[in-house]
Every structure is written in C-alpha cells, then in structure tokens.
Amino acid sequence: MSINQAWQEMDATGQAELVASGEASPSELVEAAIGAVEALNPEINAVIHRTYESARAQAASPQLPDGPFKGVPFVLKDLGAGFAGEPMHLGMQVLKDADFRLPLDTYLAERFRAAGLISIGKTNVPEMGILPTTEPRAYGATKNPWDHTRTPGGSSGGSAAAVACGMVAIAHANDGGGSIRIPASNNGLVGLKTTRARTSEGPFIGDNMAGMTTELVLSKSVRDTATILDAVHGPAPGDPYVAPAPTRPYAAELDDESSGLGFALWSDPAIEVTVDPQCVAAAEATAALLEGLGHHRVEGSPLGAIGLGDEIDLRDSFLTRWAAGQAAALGQFGVLVGRELTADDVEPLTWALAEIGRARDSGRLLADIALHHGLTRMVAAWFGAGNDLLITPTMAEIAPKLGSFDDSGGDPMAAFERALPCGAFTALWNVTGNPAISLPLAVSEEGVPIGVQIIAAYGREDLLLRVAAQLERSAGWRLPPPSSG
Image (cartoon, rainbow, N blue to C red; front, side, top):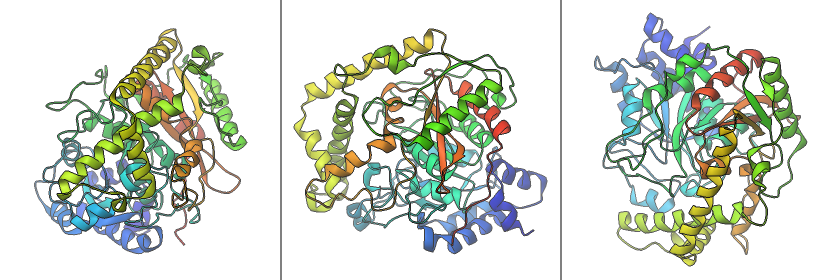
C-alpha cells in the first residue's frame, strides 16, 4: 500500500503516529495531501485557496511545533480562523475582488499551528456562512463526495468535503446555527459544536452575534476531536467571557466505560418542519445502542418541559439575531473595501437578511436575546434536574440536492425558509450555548450518511466525548472515503 492510500484511510491521530514513529515525514504527508487535492478538487471543489509553499516550508522546518498533530496536513475554512497574509473572502465576490487578506493571525489559527497542524489551503463556504449548503456565486458549488448531486452542507461544507473524500483527515470548521453538525451529518464525520466561548474567536471577534458562533473542526474520529479540543480550548486576551474549564483532559474521556447516564430522545423539533423517517430511525437506533451500553432512557425533553409554542417563536427570534449579524457584518466589510456595500455587491438572500436586520430595531434585538436567555435557563434547569443527555436527529432531512437553496426568485427569503429542515434540530443549541455533537451513525437508503446529534449541559463536552467514544467502539462507523468519481 502506498503512503497516499494508507493516509487517506487514517484519521489525524493515525497520521501523527506515522510522523512520531518515523514511518513518514511531515513533508511526505503534506505532499500526499497536496496530491490528493490536485486529484480530487477539480470535481469536488472543496479547496479554493492553496497555501502549498508555506505548507512545504513548515513541513521541512526543524522548528515545526511538537504538538499532538505534528506534521499532519490540514485546511482552514475561509471564514473565521486564519493566518496573516492569507485570503479571507467568506464566500463573497466583493472581498474576492478586493483580494482581502488577514492582517494578523487569529488566536485559534495560532493554536492549530502550535498543535503541529500544517495548513495546505482554505475551503469553500456559502456567502457569509449563511446557508446550510456551500454554493457561493464567488467560488461555485462544492459537491458531496458521497453523491455529487447533493450538497455537503454548510457553512463548513468545503471543509467537510475535503475530509470526507480524503484530501485531509481533519479540517477547521465553525458553527452559528449548525454549520459544523450539518456538514458532519451529510458527510459521515464527527462534528462537535462546543460550549459557547470554549474556543477564542479573537483577536478580531469577541462576541459574534451575541455568542451564537463557536469554532473547532470536522474530523474522522472522536479521538481527533477530543485531542484537538485539548490543544485549542481556553480563553485568550480580551475575550468577553469564558466557558467553564474541564476537570480533566478531554482525551481522558475516550477510554471511560462508565455507564448510568440518563438520556431523552427528541425527534419533534421546536419549529414546524417535516422530519424524514430515516433521520428519526437513526436517532431511535442510537437510543437503543446507548441502552445496550448501560445508559438509561428518561421521559420528556427540555423542549417538552418548556412547552415551546405561541409564547416563544424560536424561528423569528433566531432570525432577529441572525439578520442583525448580517447587517453589522456588511457595514464592517464596507470599511474593509473602502465604500458602503450595496445590493449589487452580495447575493440576494444576504441583502434581504441585512435589510431585516436594519428594520428590526435595537430594542427588539435585546428583547429577543433576553427571550433566548430565558429559554437557556429553562434548558439548564432540565439538565440540572438529573438529565444528562438529549438525543436527536442532526437534521430533519437527508442531504439535499445542490440547487435547492436558490435565492434568485422574487422572494430571496424563500432560500432561508428552505434551510429550516437542515437546522431544525441544531440552531437551538447555538441559542442556548450548549455543546452538541453529530456522529455518523447511519446511512440512508440513498447511500449518503445520516448524523445523530447528542446534546449535553452547558460546559459538559466531557460527557459528549465519553459517550461518543463508546458509540464509536460499539457501532464501528469508520467507513472508507467515498468515491470521487
């Protein structure tokens, strides 16, 4: 077996072990990753910026950091974390035309580098990370490696596709309404949305959309996710607030066989959408697996206890915060390019959301944030009452077809409405700040992966990773990379 073939089947920890044992050098792994990108990317369109020369220089350097992923190739999402001097376009034609580049390393990018990861490029995203698909007009559509007619999801769709087809074993991702977990579900990957403020978004961002977004990775294995979280979590100078520190390293949870956790199963989302029976069946099968591992099912759910209904319009209150974020961002990007942006500079949905954000006044924004804070306390009370975990489908549907989110018609917001089944089970936990993980526990009749989501109390990534590792051992989900042809 060639090193490239072996590499494509390994997780990032396995690749790091090759380097540590001397079986492969960082330069060999980087060249294998570059070769995979050059072979697969023309069809998949996951990587939009190549940083090969800096990657080669890092791989050959005697100063390569001796972190847990020393010498492992990696890609950064073109939104969020990044290195000084490299492009950051956020799927926007206006920033692409301006050739905008970051002036400084972000704190998270520095921590990725200190962990030994070597970035070989940056991945495709929908414009401003808005949609759960990756089809920006600036860079074109990214295809799902399992079925090229389907979306890999979004907004971390380029990163997910790069990992799923074997370009790299781990990739940067972030999540503001499901943007780690949705691509994880669509591509058969592990995707952890951490507790709010678990990882720093500085120095450019302190509190994004009032704490809606988090940063981490998409990976092939639970051990990769736990190990990178150990390497990058924690506050940085100027962060407005921080998540509670873990009591022990997250990697210590991987071999913990303890049982007795109480979990609820919830397959009726807080917004009105039709849920695909295959997604429900995957969650139900996971509940059965957990019972077989010694955990026990409890009745009810946080949402059932709260009684979401006419009193709490989760969809519309989420829209307030999401639209305010787009309005604020467009103003900031106007400063970057030296002029006020107009509707001609962005996609129709982006402009429609920004207009909603401008129309809803500051009082409404604060009122909807306060409503979400109240909801957060109610969810916390449910977990505090002795309930450990909540199991849901990650998505209400199987990976949609490319082209499903067209915003070019008379009402661009139709694309936002079309996105609701993708985020029906994920967005709530961005609102509350709870950690949530998507695991690749099923495959659909159509032959594409289905994710199952597990949610824990605020700050309890330890429980998620412990149970995820148990499920990984029990279910044996590790699949070979899908065909790229």
